[in-house]
Image (cartoon, rainbow over all chains, first blue to last red; front, side, top):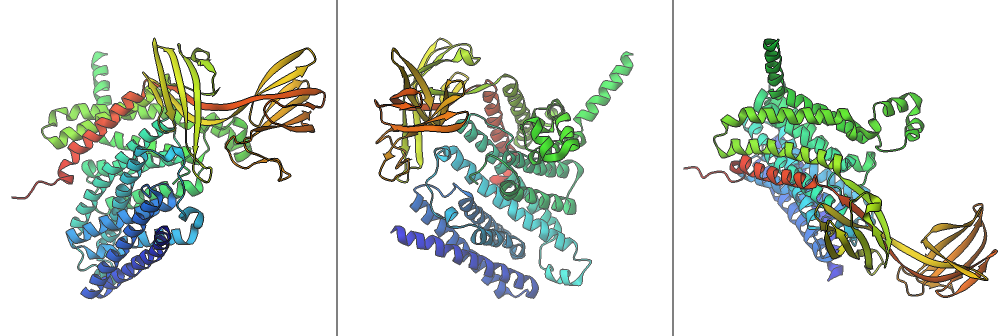
Length: 282
Length: 340
C-alpha cells in the first residue's frame, strides 16, 4: 500500500508538471491562433494537471497521517494546487481563457523549481517536529494557499491587462488580445481577486501570530519572513486605498499588483534564500 | 494667539485625516521594515564593524538600524500612522450607514487596537528562560516576577522510531502565583496559562549529579550535559552524558537517546587541554588526575520559556475585530446577493 502511494506521489509530480506545461503551451497557441480546440485542450490539460496535483496531496496525506503542509516542498505543491483551482474557477466563471497564458507559467515554474532543486530529502515524508504540531499552523498554511493562489491569479490578470492596454501600440499584441474582455472588466476583476486574497493574507498573518504565541511565546518577533508578510500586506493595503481615494485604477493598479506578487514570491522564496531567519520550515 | 492655534490645529487635523498622509506613512513603514530584514538584527556592535566596515558599521549602530524595530523613530512612525487612522475613522463615523462601511471602520479600529496591544507588550512584557532539573524548584521572584514557585515534577520525551523527538512534556507545579496554585502538564504548543503568565516547553537536556570525594568529605557537583565545572584554578571537568552506552564499538558513543545504559564521560582539562578521561556508570567512582569523582545519578532538565505579557490579550482582541471587520466589509464579495 505504502509502496504504491510512494510511486503515486513521485510519478504524479512528473505527470502534473507535464500536464501544466502542455496546458501552458496550448494557452499560448490559443492566444496566437484563436483556435477553439487549443483552448479546450489547454483547459483539459489544466484539469488533468490539477487532478494529478490533488492525487499527490491526498497520497501524501495518507502516507504522513497529516495534511501535507509541513515543509517547502509540500507548500509549493499546495500553492500550485490553490492557484490552479482559483484560476479554473475564474476561467469558467468569467470565460477568460486568455488568462491561462499568464497564470499557468506560475505553477509550471514552481513545480520545475521543485523537480530541479529539491532532493529526496525534502520529498520523503518526514516526521514533523513538535513545534509544527498545531491546528493554528494548519489554518495558517491553508489560508496562505488561498491567499497566495489568488495573488498569483491577480498577477496574471495584471499582465493580461497591460498587454491589452498596450494593444494600440502594436498590431501583433492587438491580434493576440482581440477577444480578451474590455480592460475595465479585467481591472475590476483583478480588484475583486485582490480583495479576496488580501482578506486571506490578513488571516494568514493572524493565524501565524497565534501559532507563534502558542509555540514560542512571541506572537511577533520581526523575523524576516514575518516582516515580509507584513510588507506584502502593506503593499496591497496601499493598492486598495490608492484605488479608493485617488482612483488608482488601470495601469498603475496593474503595476502595483505585479509588485505585490513579487513581494509574495520574495516572502516565500527570497527570504529563505537571501535572508537569515527563524522560519526554517517553509 | 488663540486664533492662530485654532488655525494650526485645523491644519494639523486636516493633514492627519488625509488619506495621502496615511498612505505615505504606510509606504515609509514598509520600506523601513524591509531595510531591517537586510541588516541582521540584535547582533553585538562589533559584528557590524566586521561585516560592513567602519563607516557603514558606525552609521548602522548610530541610527540603531541593528535594533530597527525597537527604535523611537520606528515607534513614532507607527504611532503617527495609528493616529492618522483613528482621525480618518472618526471623520468617517457619520458616513457609516451600512454593513460595508461599518466593516471598513471596524477594520481600521482593529489595526489600531492591535498596534496598541503590541506597544503594551513591548513596554510591559517580561520574558526569561529557565532550566529546571526534575524534582527541583525555582522562585520566580528571582527573575523579576512578583511571586510564585515553579517546580518540575516529571519530564518525558516521546520519540519517533528514528529517534527524532515527537513531543516532550513537563509536569509542572506553580505555587503561590498571585495567590493561586497550578498543577499542569505542558508540551510544545501547549503552554501553561495562569492569568497573564504563560510557561512554554522550549527545550530539554540531561543533568548529572557527581560527588567530589576527599578522604574526609564528599562535595556534590551538579553539571549539565556537555558543560564544564571548575574543580580548582585552571582545572575543569567536562561531563558528557551517554544515555545508551556502547562499549564494544571502541568509540565512546550512544546507540540511542534513551537512558538504557546511562554513563557519564568525564574529561579532566588543565587550562583547556585534556589530561585525563574516564567513563562511569551510576554509583561508580574513579580517579581523574588528582581528583576522585563519583557519578551519583542523572535526570532530565526542562528548558522553559516564562512570559508575563498583558498586551497579548489586546492584540488577540484586535485580531478578532480584524476578522469581524473583514467579514462585514467583504460579505457581499464572498456571498454576493442573488440578482433579481
